Every structure is written in structure tokens, then in C-alpha cells.
Amino acid sequence: MSLVSINLRPAITTVAGSMGQLDRGLGIDARTIPLLAALPVLAFGISAPCGPWLARRLGAGRTVALSMLVLAVALTARVLLPVLLLPGTFLAGTAIMTASVLLPQIVKANGGSGWWTGLCSMGFGLGAALGAGLIQPLQYVLGGSLQGALAVWAVPAVLGAVLILRHGGRRTEPAAPGTSVLADRAVVAGRTTADAQARSRAARALPQQATAWAVAAFFGLQAMLYFAVTSWLTVFLVSKGITAGDAAALLAWFSVAGLPASLLAPVLASRPAVLKIMAPGLGVLVAAALLGVLAGPAELQFLLVGVLGIVQSAGFGLAVALVVLRSTGPQTAGKLSAMSQGLGFALASLGPVGAALLHDVTGGWEAAFWALAGVAMLLALAGYLAVNGPVVSVEEATVPAGQARPAGVGS
Image (tube, rainbow, N blue to C red; front, side, top):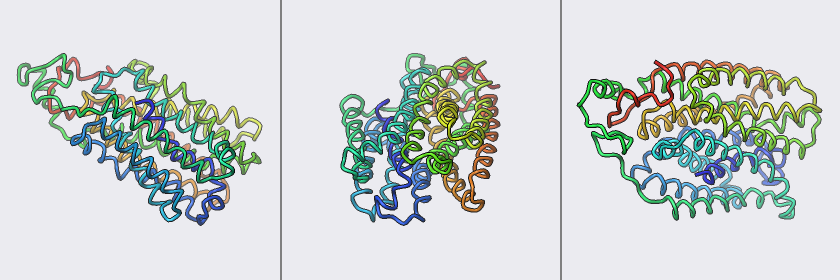
């Protein structure tokens, strides 16, 4: 699954890393570039239900493999045929979301620890860094061809599909009704008062549970911040006098600096005392880091962008961890993941467009960065509510009360 997660960001960061060349390299109208930045994120929000729907019919492994193949086709088609640039980008976003939404469900179903969640979230950051950092070198190696440098990312997508089909493509059946989602701890329905309480809680639909909305808000707000930054950071840095090549390298550094944080955040979040502080605290740190990048001189951007990458990557790792930690089992994790990523990425699509509009209206980046800092403070509030509310459950099977709070937090 780590290889899959690596494939789920280059389709976006390769475009961001070559933002200043797209009109010349691909012959597109410069006015469509903001739409190109927002389109995959919009596709994320629309296509989130596809993953669970296909997984019920094909199995999670085969669904992820299929999404990797579709991603490879989309990455190739969008640069070979200019007319397919926007549809291909949307299709790539759909394929990415189909695979992405199933990762927490697979981790939960296999009893994955914080380390496994961290490895998957770190894969996102590694893929983002490779996409942004290698776009210029690949273009040089391929004789200046931007199309080739963008299309080459279809290769690891195909490789990911092949490996999944060989090692994890078997169709998995859902747990039998009336048993615990933890196969080695089966519980007969209706046997205890604790079971009755668990069924009462599970009977509530996901949209009726405040914690589910808080987790979705946390996921969406951190994604809005991430995609706004990755879409326009290079343009902002160029406005500070940094060369386009160095700006692309700093975008890659933004992702590289955050790799340890994306790995460790889910591990630390498995400790309830740490989680209660981390969830709201990260929002405050992101706000401070954004304003630091805005105010800092060009000479300090390596340090400031690195700090921003650390806190934002930790936010993503925590967002994935919350889906796992605040759900009772694989069924709930899958549905909570679909809700969080579907609504979250629909919200996140406003980030790149909103930042661009504020820049165009004001003629500078100050308003956009202050607005993003305000979003980061909302992220802090969502984090507080996500870890202090009741655990989320829509399990068809019952779970003992003592197992209903894997994170150990909330009431």
C-alpha cells in the first residue's frame, strides 16, 4: 500500500512544479491554469463514493489496482492529446480518490498500527516531493519535453497495479452479520448490556454523528491548506525574487521536510494524551508557519518552507489517523473515510481557486496568506471537536464497549 500512496500526489505536484511553463509547454490558455490546479481536488470530492461502491463488488485490492491503471491512462492521455488535458486531469483525480479512500479501510481491516498509517501517509508526501522535485530534471533528460516529464508518472502507477494484483488482489468478503469486526474476538449479538449500547450507538447514521463531521472538517481544512500551498507556492516564491527552478526545488523541499512528520504523527496520535493536544495545536502551528513564509525574506525561505512542510504534513498524517482512531471497525472506517475525503476534498477545491482570486483582486499575496491562516485556526477548532466527541460507529456488527474506543479519547 505504500507504493500506492506514493502514486497519489505526483499527478498534482508535477503540474504545480511546472506551473510557469504550462501555457508554453502544453499550449494551453493561461486563464485555464487556476482551473487545472483545482480540477483534481474537485474530482476528489465528487468521486469519493466510488471507492467503497467498487470495493463491495470487486474487493478493495482489485479496486485499488483498477484505479492505478485508470490513473496511468489519464496521466498519459492528458499530455498526448491537448483536448484531453482537463478531462484527463479530472479522471486522474477520480482514480486517485478511489484508491485513497480505501487506504484507511484496508489499514483498519488488517489491524494496522499507527506505524502502518504513518507509512501510508508518508507515501503521499514522498510522492508529492518526487513529483515536484523531478519535473525539471526529467524534462532535461527527455530533451526539454514537458509532456514526457508529466507522462512518465504513468509507469509507477502501472507497477503499483501489478504488485497489488499479484499480492493483494483477492476479493475479501465482509464479516458475517452478528459478529465483531475483529475476527478473533467474535461477539454474539444481543448477549450483553454493553452490546445493546453498542448497537444503539451504531444505529445512528454517519451524518447524525457530530464527531464524523468534525473529522471530515479536519480532513477538508488541512487538504484546503495543502492544495492552496502546493498550487501557488512556486508562483509566490518567484514573486519574492527566487528563480523558477529554485522555487520548484523549494516545493519539493516542502514535501521532503514533512516526510518524518507524516510518519510520526499517526504514531504519536495513538497516545490519547498526545492526541488531545496535537489535534488543535497543529492548526495554530500551521497558521504561524504560513505567516512566517509570507513575511520572511527570500534568504530564509528554505527554513520557513521546511517548517511549513513539517506542520502541514503532520496535519495530513493526523487526518488519516483520525479516520482510523475515531472509528469502531473497518465498516465505519471505510464510510468515515469516504465522508471525510468526499466532503473534505470538495471543500479543499476552494483553496487553489480562492487563493488565486484573492491574489488577482488585491494584486499581492498578503490577503491570500492571511485567509489561509484563518482557515488554519478553523482547523484547530475541528481538531479539538474531533478528539473530544464520541467515537464514530455505523458497524452492522456489534463490538464490546471496552473495544469501542480504540483511541481512548472522547466521551
